[in-house]
Image (cartoon, rainbow, N blue to C red; front, side):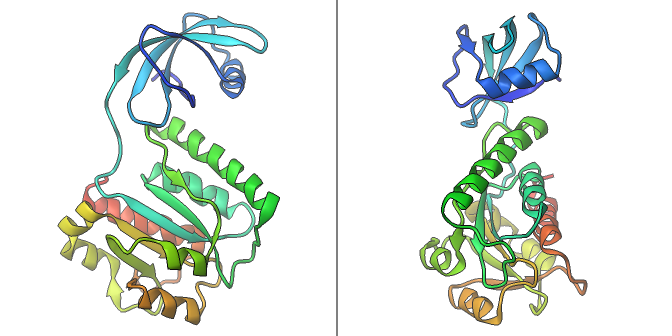
Length: 247
């Protein structure tokens, strides 16, 4: 397949586009040449075939071709509300969640979060994560960018998030099985969407779990093993894909 590139501009067939600086660098790293085929998408759905026209040291253009309306989105829109993880775990988690079709990601500052983000530091991480989302979409073939919300405190997010669709809290203390519940509510969850709440390292505090349950979240489990925070959300996404049709 031709290399895919995200461009944050309107795309129209037969237009000539000056490629963004980041795309120019990527084109050069891949050693592409004028006349090579590429694919462009802007995250709003669909993609365009394109042909590289000119390539300079800091400049490149592409001739935009026909639009392809094909999509690769999953049938169930899943919002992953993820407690901030330390080190590079959050980077890895966001990248893989995009590959698994997540519709939205909400990073949460929870009581047990090792990482503390606010102010300029939070803005820089947000920009870094947004670049990861774009790169993951380029790699996996998605034409719609998942929404990446700014970092929020657990309390503020819980107070403002709409009470729509299924609201699931992954907890080792939960009695309900995620696969069993997904099978039982397959049609409803597929139509209404799912919000999946995952704690950071050490999980959510008992007070946070209680608050989530009062807000309508249902505790679910993936079995007797305790999963790391960077594994838990991805395992849930894969489970929902398998049952609700994402695979």
